[in-house]
Image (tube, rainbow, N blue to C red; front, side, top):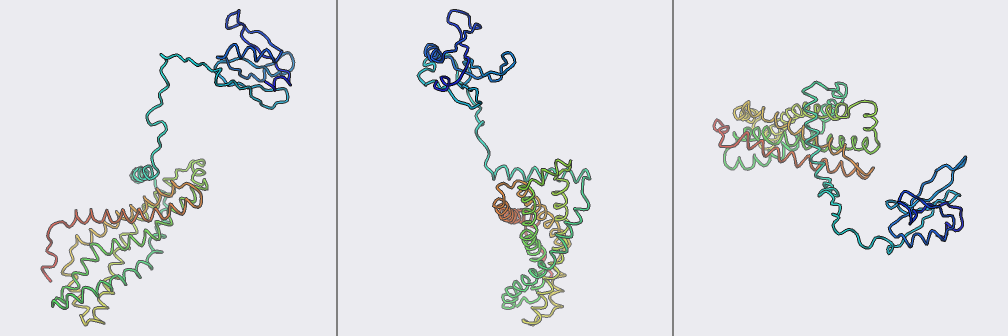
Length: 362
């Protein structure tokens, strides 16, 4: 109460001999301490701005629901505290405590709501595609980025992977006298597994990381919020074009990679191991079925959807500035690769379970 001793403060305390609506005016600061000691349940509140005549004068009121504050005339806030001993020592035992909701202080882990955001974003993209809400200019730009600009690295990778597998197959099949089966085995391996998976891995490392980094940078720099202010849906403008471009470009990249891989395998087998190119191509033609090509296209589309959805979801949920952008980019690529391998197993089990007869004609 030293603050009250140095400043002119008008306090209104409830009179003991009157009803609770009657207030007694006290100007002596020493009387405030006396009244507080006699009424431990009352707390001094602040009402600043009550007009007395033509000027504003700070006034203190006793209020049992507010904290104790005293605002002197100079405008600086100072507190008048009531000790813990003056609080009500005997609360009502029949009064039930306030019970907080069970999950009021629980927040889901980040990986959980990020995983849920993938499914939510996928549903939003599907709905917008069905409704025709497609930003065609952005879609064509992303299609050029995912398709033609990724051809070089995909061709280089598939060529060397094809030659590496050719070395292994030719060595073992030559010992068994099955030189004519090399082309068919390579063709089945490329169409069913190698071409879709290798192409998707390359696209995930090159395009998926770019998607996550771009959208993550836009999120931390509040550019996505700016799109909402401009009445532009970020899903329509940013996410849907990337998903469509990935799903359309990957099947064509897979076919190109299959062609280059088989060509490199045939050239290596002819030049190093003496197996004619005609033998390799004839064996591949007899082993392949139309369903093998269709299954490769379906796998590529599914892998493209996984890469784009995961990368965009990780990008738009980025937190933490530049560090968060880097973490989101790395995490998006890893999760995309895991999703590709899981989807490849499920699709392969669905498409090719049971014994096949593709090698009977070799």
